[in-house]
Image 1 (cartoon, helix red, strand yellow):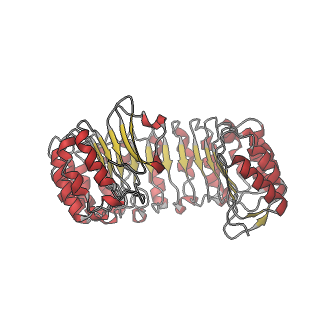
Image 2: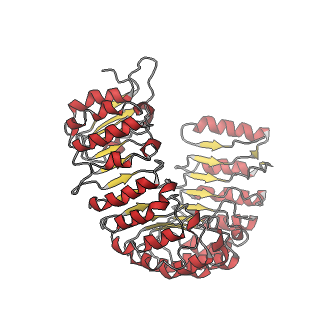
Image 3: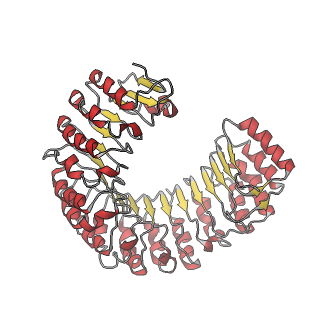
Length: 503
């Protein structure tokens, strides 16, 4: 059997991976489990072979009776040929994980899959995401799940699910007593059947992850979900983001959210939160003492109404990631946030991008920047930063702070003068763990690059982890362009300068 452009790996632990050459895993990644895995990923046949991934997989299955994981995601050739694989499913009846994401499954594939699931009673994970033909056919696929099903993870992202599919899911959920992860994101038509889904969720007491991003949720949806939360005592992650009609729903129904005492991740970005929502959430979010990640980005009405909420974030000492980009913060709300952030010692990711009030006021974050020994990602893109802000940041770096910073985004801050970039670049070399830096200009702006660029090159040569520098639309004079070309030749294997967009 010719395995063109693919590799078969068997680890000492019995793990098996079947990968395209473009995505061969490192030996470190290969030792992640003590089970048998078969993965075919992103296969494209070469001129020497016309045998697509499905036929290779079919040929292998009879020799893998102990197979536990089958991942053939991102293979276009699977579409229309899945029955060739499902006919062999009885040979791998110990299968625990089946992943068929983005395989262009057809209606016939979906029907065949529904029948095949009878042969794998130990299945724990099923991912059919990014297959539009799943929509309208969920009952055909999942009707074989019976009481006692071992399914722990069900992912149906962007599957064009219908309202009828949503209703069926609500009826199915009580059967899935072991379910821990449910991801129905990017299915905008299931919002109308959320009542059924919510009723079903009341029976999934083991659920740890619930993702309903961009599902057409409305204000009423918040009320329905709020009635469910008290049944989900094990929930760790809740994603309701990108539901723009949800705004206003928390005004009268946030109380039960506080019962999620183990919640670690809350994502409400781009939900059109109103001032009333913010007031209600102010009473609830600070009570989620185990919260580690909070995303409130792209809710612009927070700008003038979130002072109390942001101030009370100080009561979340476990918070590791705080994303508040594009929230139209005003000086008062930014001040409250800055004061609260001093009390977040575990903070690793801090995103304030697209809040113009930060410009000229970065000094309010001075104590936070000095005390944040865990900070790894700082994003201040399009914050109207001025020269004094960048100089302040340079002084913080110079005094040995931000030593663990890995990603720094200062892009789209066109008001910083050459002197500011010079002092910043002179101190950049002190960030020994930095991997990515972005100082790109806005798409509409082109600007001559000053002599500070030499300081940047000098610093970069002393940064052992750096892999990417973004500086789009900076115009390099011939002398500096020649220096960059020399630098690129010397560091081509490890550092990428993204200076596209230059005139």
